[in-house]
Length: 310
Length: 293
Image (cartoon, rainbow over all chains, first blue to last red; front, top):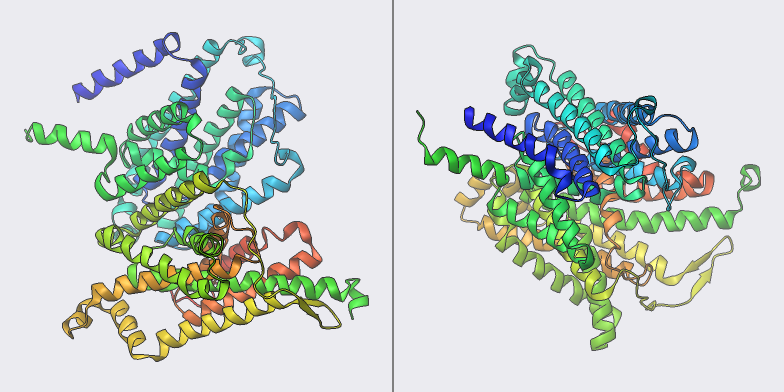
């Protein structure tokens, strides 16, 4: 327990001084994706629901943020709220339909709905079609108290948003509600026989996960000042799965680690073009064939095996 | 009647034919997915990439080796099917005991690798494939390009042959039995692992065959199967994977629905299949031809 605490404090300190050692935009992007991956992992790792369409929440929220801030000229806080609310509503609708089927069908249904949202985003007037929404001006937060033009200042805002999202997920997992979710993951029939309405729990978890993915998407649009079709595409849905998988499903810190690894990799390999996809595909293959627990999961196992129980 | 609806018959029948052709591809691909899922318990995400490989195989055979379309129609599915057999032997075989999820993820990763490599080698803009039967007939109410008519008929024949093979032959009976209870079938002295390998090869070959048929209609490009496979997933959810005939009927039916939408309300033509999926999930969650399990 203490070892975990020490590590947590060390990570927090590292996060606080990070913008003086690394490029803040990179850090902020990575934090947004880390939150996105954590939101995805809340479903797959703790409820056993594999959503292969999470990009729809991430992407649509970015568009909502952009539209509220750019076209309506409102405050960024309202833009983020609109994004989260939009993602939650979309999550409620698609989730209610998708949980009517089990297992691998669930993945296919969420994937299909995400594709539908993608097609809608190409055609709908408020998304800017192929161009997306460009040049969303960064406005000060809290009515002018926090200037966001400076990347380092904005970094702390994004870090606060990330910690809020991460803390929410931590609370959800360690609450009685989270216990029921894990019970459903491990044995749905038994949970039902104990009187839990599994479908209602699943739907609530799905909506929460969608809203948190939306929080990540809106924040990313605020940082990078644009929202494009890439964020709603099936490739993005696959990317978030990869991040959670690389870090370790069902570990709370795993998706954060996975997101940083994948974003770093994309940063360094940006020049490789199509090869980024090939490498991502290979990582999928290697992990499924050999390291299904992910980096954090394997490390935790190694740690445990080193020091036998006691 | 047509004047009443304000739709010229040429437009209506033209779109219906297009819908029928799209439906033919939906049917062939969802059929392959259903056959593979029944036997391997794996949703083959690589299906779109294998469809693309079929088209590419035919195109390469034509441009490099001068092999005509009709030979490629047989040869390309064999080559790609063989590739599938190797894939099954080397990778898929090792994950059957795991959750369905891992098969999905593995084949997704493989699709990324394959499509990425093809894109790297040949770029993402398409290459044209000359129509093997140029020309067409004027039917009075519409113009029918001969090759497109051929595709619809060929797809129907392929689908029905697959149905016959699985539902009416001895090998098909083994296959169905092994899907139900592999241990028992093994006890009768049938080599079930080989049967599984062959099934995957067959499903992949079907995807490649669809790809060869698509080559003269579409451009041959690395990403031609990427979006298609997502639509086919929706088709599979709508039809349910329980029945072979169900896949065929659903595939062709949805193609027609898409064609009709293009005539009456074009902006929705991309999304109509997903809307149908939402409705089916509301009304009959197990799918039109599926059994609840």
